[in-house]
Amino acid sequence: PGLRGLPPVDARFGRLAVGNLVLGGLFTSRLNGNLREDKGYTYGASSDFEMGRQAGPFVAAAAVQTAVTREAIEEFMRELQDIRQGRPATAQEVEFAKTSIVRRQPLTLETNSQIAARKKAGQYDEKYSSFARSFPSLIQACGLAQATAFAEAKKNEAFLHDLSLILGAVGHR
Image (cartoon, rainbow, N blue to C red; front, side, top):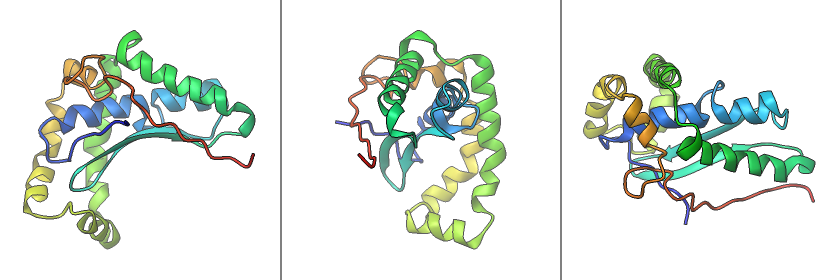
C-alpha cells in the first residue's frame, strides 16, 4: 500500500514534479489553498514525492487542531480525488508550476550544506549531475496533458491512480 514516485533521473519525473506542485508543492497549491485559505484548518498543507537515489513515497501533510482532523483528512482526500477526475490541472496552474521549478532549481545547490545533503541522499553522482543539467528543459517540455496525466485514474499511466494510501494522524488525544 501507499504510493511511490520516481527516482529523479527517470524521464517521467518532470510530469510528476509539475503535477505535484499544482496539487501541494507550492504555497499557492490546491491543498494549501483549501486547507489554509478556504477552511482555516492549518498554517500550511503540502504534498511531495520524497526522493533520494530511488523512488520515494508520496506524502501529503498538514498540522491541524485535533477538533478538525477528520475534516482536514476529508479535504485532503477530496483534493486528491478532484485532481484525478473532477478538476484536472489547468494550463495556468501548469505554467506557474513549471516556472516555479525552473526558477528555484539553482537555489537548491547554493550552499555547502545543500550539496552535502544531496550527496548523502545519493543525488550527486555523474548520472544525477547529467540529469540536473537537463532538468530545466525536461520541465519546460512538460505540457498540460503530461502534467494532468500524473494524477489520472488510469492504472500504469499515473502516480495517483488508485489512492491506496496509508493515513496517519498524530495528536495529543
